[in-house]
Amino acid sequence: MSDNNKNKIKRPLRRDFMLIFAVLLIGMVGGVLLFNNILLEKYYINDKANVITIAYESVNDAMNSGDITSDSFNIELMRICERYNIDVIVADENSNIVKSSSPDYFYLQKKLWANMLGLSEYSDNPTILIQKDDYILQIDTDARTDTDYMEMFGFLDNGNVFMIRSALEGIKDSVRISNTFMTYVAIGILLIGALLSFFLARRITKPISKLTEISNRMKELDFDAKYTSKHKNELDLLGENINELSETLEKTIRELKTANLELKKDIETKEKIDKMRSEFLANVSHELKTPIALIQGYAEGLQDGIADDDPESREFYCDVIVDEAGKMNKMVKQLMTLNELEFGKNNYNLERFDIVAVIQNYLKSADILAKQKDVTVQIEDSEPIYVWADEFKVEEVLQNYYSNALNHIDGDRIIKIKFKKGDGVVRVSVYNTGDPIPQDSIEHLWEKFYKVDKARTREYGGSGVGLSIVKAIMDSMGQRYGVVNCEKGVEFWFELETC
Image 1: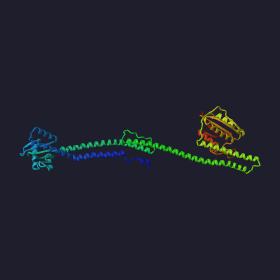
Image 2: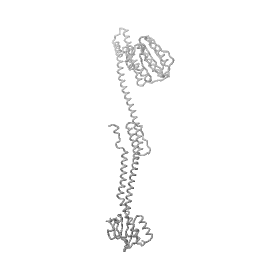
Image 3: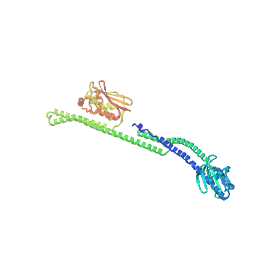
Image 4: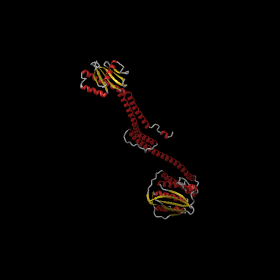
């Protein structure tokens, strides 16, 4: 499975949040509408029953106290009737009306006695709500108007009969209006709730989405993304913790990579050292095998008295031993120098000096070597050229180049030393006449113990280490060096930084 499919959000949190909010909102609004339809009318009827009961108690108390005709009672009765939309009628045992709050008192008087006597002329199968010794509370339908009324009728404490009634059409209209109004309110609440849920979901899920994006980038080891907190709530605190986690992971991974690189370098260095040690032992063993065999052979000859009777032979034997021992000593010193250079144990003393003067002084000291081999040495005229380098190491490079030129010179037997200034450097060239170097051997010249012509190298006592020393010195100074075949000869060169 690809990472895109794996990281794809199948159930967005915003959608779930809006769905939950919508379900809760619809449930609450629907519950309110349901209860309003089922219970509101019953609540109104119970409230109307309580009002009629209060009116009954007020009339009964007034009759008992004898102030039913007082202005205060009339005002109180009017207030109750108008407020709760009720009609009151009180009659004595002779059917004379004692108190009435309705202009239609004649019909109410008939209705009162019909209820008292149980006549069905003015009622249509009434529903009794409360039945007590003194009164009955019922819901009945007015046969004239087909309107439902709540009626209470019975006896007062003084023996008068009474009836209190109120139309229920007002209650039903109120319930209907209330339900209609609540429906509109519910629709408005749902619309507003939908908008609020969208913005709330967006506000809550936006930082979560940002945190998800940051965590995905962290998974890909991208630690540049940071969470920016604004409100300092729980999500912002989580974001700050993720920022700290990102920084810690980045630091830890960086340290691990650094440690891994160092370990890799250490392993490579160890492998290089092991390889160099193995090559060194093999090459040294090979190079020392011949001189040791010669020394051992000639020494055994002297020991066996082969040259005892011939002084010249004995001297020859001794010369061979001394010569081979000298070659071994020279090679060991060169190997020690090369070892120090390759393993960075050799200290460099950078100084400013005139390279032209150094070369001229060296050629004067090596003039005897040139004369022994009948070589003409030419140096290009030049003004002083000052460079930054280790004078001793540069002279060692020059010595190796010069010795190499003497050992391989041929033809006109000329060595030329030239100077060529460049951009911040000077190139010193050592040219000698002779045979060119085979093209396939040029890239191997700088390897330890490599010899183009082994027989000739053996003839002059070369070990194949000199050019390796040149390479190590020039690499350590960060300067260029090389060799090129020229017409009738070979030219070795190296560069130094001028000042």
